Length: 393
Image (tube, rainbow, N blue to C red; front, side, top):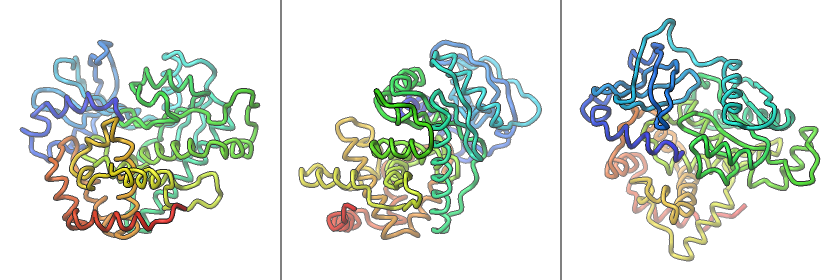
């Protein structure tokens, strides 16, 4: 999600967006959010963009936060906004067919080679330059994850919503295609990974994990599973990124609201530990990779008090501390869901109700957390004792 930082910095710098306006004036459900506009503006790249969108926020200085029919969010400062013309009828997301066509055209415009297949499921539109077999397998896994995710929260008294639009997925033929596209898509830091979720475009981008030098193309679902048994850690990355997308499209989190990173990343790591190659998926298994990292950091005396990830996102965003901070985020999430499940669901409800753009101060983040879970210092002691006794499997 690094490509959003410049945009968010501008939005937060515009005082009228989150300071001079009343807090409820920043909400996405203001009347204008239902109207459709033709918006012409200059992007940061200097290219002129014309899109149909709804207005999520309109600042007093004339800047806008808009959401296109494809789900992409743009922050447009007043000096780059050319025209804002109201259209008829009201705003509606792209249909599955329209979204598939739009994604295909974007891939072609960015020079991604090959032919593109579009696979649709009840909730996803998958455009792939890989084999249809692999794209269909991705669709099956994503649907299973979505159902598992919503069932998990329903059992804890938290009713999530159906995604309001088809969820976009791009699956590229190999890691090189993925790396090239990640760079033009504004996700340079993800180019060496196995996938990413873009909070700006609301899509996940993956590549075919079954491709290997000298290996034949997979021809069946069984072929896919056999091949992926050799790279199960990479499958965890797919589940991680897909969990982000699901969270932001079922009401658990809200794009461009103040979602604590320890929470969003902790939940993604909580679900990535589940083996979606098995027919019976067990949610809530210990994430052995993250637990090992936490214990290694503990032995090396690198672990920090949990308040360092609760109060702000600095350690999660810094290269020298991110891996340890991610492990701590998983640890905190796993601990709270195991020992304080009801309180955790209530905390998630509060986070889901936050308005767009205003960011709390570190003190406010701490108060928000401790109002639900109690004193963070005492909880930190309990967390460490819990983790030291936790079995790795």
